Length: 403
Ligand SMILES: *[C@@H]1O[C@H](CO)[C@@H](O)[C@H](O)[C@H]1NC(C)=O
Ligand SMILES: *[C@@H]1O[C@H](CO)[C@@H](O)[C@H](O)[C@H]1NC(C)=O
Image (cartoon, rainbow, N blue to C red; front, side, top):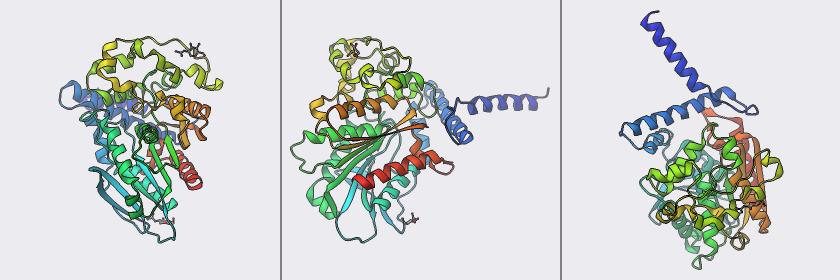
């Protein structure tokens, strides 16, 4: 066998390894999914390698996907798009051009990316905001909050909160022709986490007079306490967001110190002093029977109290909105929650739906059986998936009817 054929053989084996990913039976567009998941896997391996060599931080390599997908702010016939700043935080602003009578609706949107990557100007986020603005004739403020590993909690939260507070001032609302009774916070993944946290924080803020009409949480991350929920176990190695990456995102949100990540990976990071918080994430009570399947609930295993003292953020409801008390949840606005079956974060969303409903909040829960984490980001070529468009349309139609 010549060197050439040996190389060809090794290359094919490597490609086959990358392309092969267990794609759940009920997902459409299987070839596209395999290719996409191999791209993500490759970038993940490169990131590990670059970090191991000491060349770059893991997240700096992942950030390459964000950079590749960046599009400049471009206005079209329907929407004027500009990059600007609100309260010193960069935002991408979408203003509908149609001159309809009356005040407009508004959406504050927080992008996903595990608090570490992503930006409002990534093509899928830009499309999502543009289409929302056009179809709802709404002002959309898509926030470029600061990211880890350079900035840790609570910076991400404080940035989106500062933009929200700035925008909710009556002078600003009237400048953009926005109806103060028709405002929403929304976000996906880590952005859904930030949206849920902002909606809770606004309830306690005497300086803000404007109330949100709705919150929309798209496959949100909502808790750090139990990283071994049934959804984490079932989707540990599924596409786009394997458990190891979610653990990495969570720990990087608080610190680059790998001891928190290691403790989180074995689900032994919560100190015994925080044991009372486990009732808020007890899947044995909060998941419907059909999702418990044959999983067996086991009591939490506690970790050292040092981690809790050093990084109290992971026990803070501003980082983990599921840890809020019922009395607080009770006052939240009408809520939309999207969860996907093939997603480590599935049970976070479902448990929040249970807790909100028990607290008396009206919730529309869209559970997509044939979808995976991040599906909404696949709405344009080369990764244009029917499921992404279907979920996006459901969300936009819901906003149109309820905001
Ligand atoms: C502008 O809006 C119309 C009606 O919603 C739509 O058909 C058209 O595609 C939009 N244009 C762009 C550039 O998105
Ligand atoms: C979780 O719920 C189960 C069933 O109700 C209960 O037996 C268990 O003690 C609860 N655990 C915690 C930590 O709240």
